[in-house]
Length: 155
Length: 105
Image (tube, rainbow over all chains, first blue to last red; front, side, top):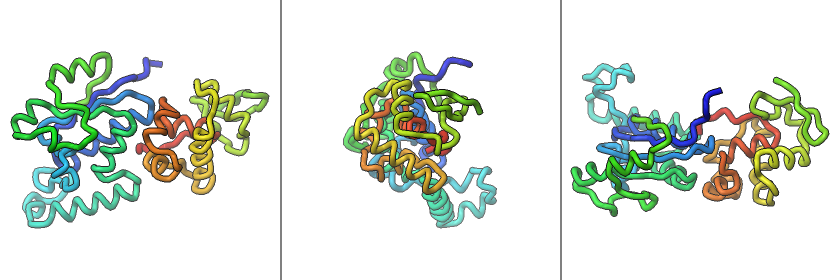
């Protein structure tokens, strides 16, 4: 058997509902297996740890062919809210937590959460815009150091 | 599936050592499996989690998620990982003699 994975460092770069959840699920799944996990939030992915936004993440209904909704329909007012609501309902049935609770679950499980310094500066944000559980605002170089010896997953 | 002999019990286990027949489990067996996993001794808090996992599985046919474990077992998520660093749900299931949890959460 191949060597077991002992550490993963997951990058979350997209800010939509479907852009954020997979990385959170991967990180939580890692911790459940006893695998060390770092999560690095960059660009719009920072919405997942931004206290102003993390309760209001939306599914992208335009430019998302996987949804199988015609673009013109996806662009109608309220479409994104409806699809997001449906997806939230389905996830609740599967015991997948809403993002704020998921972030707390991850932090409590020992996953380390970081924001990307370049993105924080670019968006004009500061430490107080983020969740208390945030481990730090770090550079790409810091991230690679933290990730050393493990696997890096970009989402 | 194969059989293993632990603490004088012959049990049916999967490739990772999870019991396939929860009725073959005893507390002594749990203690022995925990020792093999490097958890020794099992404290009352460990037992609280193990019993919760096992009871919930026997009631519903499904092992609880880590979210449910943290919310309903009476042990917080932080404590769960302190007690079972290599994965609370997985280890508690193995020690409690139920099959490996299949959920992704």
